[in-house]
Image (tube, rainbow, N blue to C red):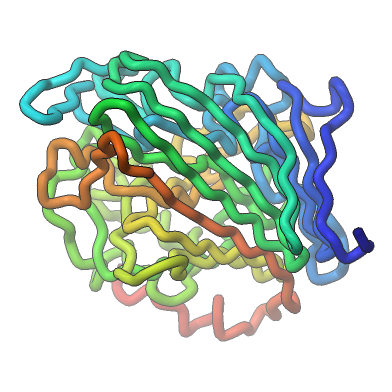
Length: 371
């Protein structure tokens, strides 16, 4: 092992809430993982001037990980996003799922995978180091049929790319839609918003939602709407637009984009903070990307004892589409015995030069046409 080899270490007792691990890359990127929720708790990256900061929102303590911060960085499942009315139609039977106060099932139910302590072991490859988390979800867990065996592996490579691979098998037909719920704020400044970030999403269509944030059905083109993020777009002006879909989501994005089709890992989104030069590129094998801009943050406190304000972070959740069991035209989320659920997402962290005030990316030429 050389100083150019990524490393994985068990975190000292008490240094991370819930017990965890630290991954280090010679690129200067480090990541903290927690056994609770197979969670990405922190990512520290340098800015254009070499100053390192945490760019993932986290909870201050174990109590918050079971409360306001339950989804921060967590692996959510069995089914990330929403299933309407907690009703799962599958092979002629409707299974009653556990629901939240909305009356729908969100992120696998009120006691989903984010609340569980996962078994964990370190893993290493020739150019990466990480942790493999394992969880067995019994038949009937939160109402879902079938015993599900789940593995989530995080690997950080020498170049600063964090790859998350999800694998699952079942002994009876069920549905699976796993994702990670990390919130990014590339400024690395406690209490800042993402209004000064630029976002690009590789999609030509999105799923409009109703007042309960359930997809209405057919996709809609992004062209001519605030959802057209085909080029790097400043988030602040976009989130402030008067549009009924933004209003339904609480004044921002909480929608699923239909990623352009392809095979293997392909680009999903890029997030850029011009002032610091930090970037994260998201690549995935999944067909969809849920973008949530923290529209309902209400001051939960992070590790730096600063409250997370509204729009204080942005989640880039790679996944299948929400409420797919009620929409036969969507890609199927059904997993059957003898099959393997296998999904991969990568976050590539890089740093460039900080943008000038006259940068073409965030200057007068930005793509805000009439919105």
